[in-house]
Image: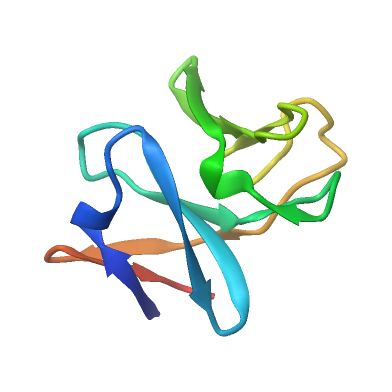
Length: 105
């Protein structure tokens, strides 16, 4: 596990990007609760590192992020593209230790 940031660095309803071992990881905090998700930051359709800046949504209890480019939605729990299930981004385990956010690669 790698220390990525502090919980207070992620405002509820937003995401941040952390560089961990040369990989850009998008870390999301969809609500004011301490539930966190981590997926790859690169939009696989445009090879642009932008997912951490996407809009977070929720449907039937599952959170997703819409890419700021063309709005493809990626499920936060596993990185699956909801608009094209043949495409996904990496998903990473997240642990909260006190107020520190740790990511497993």
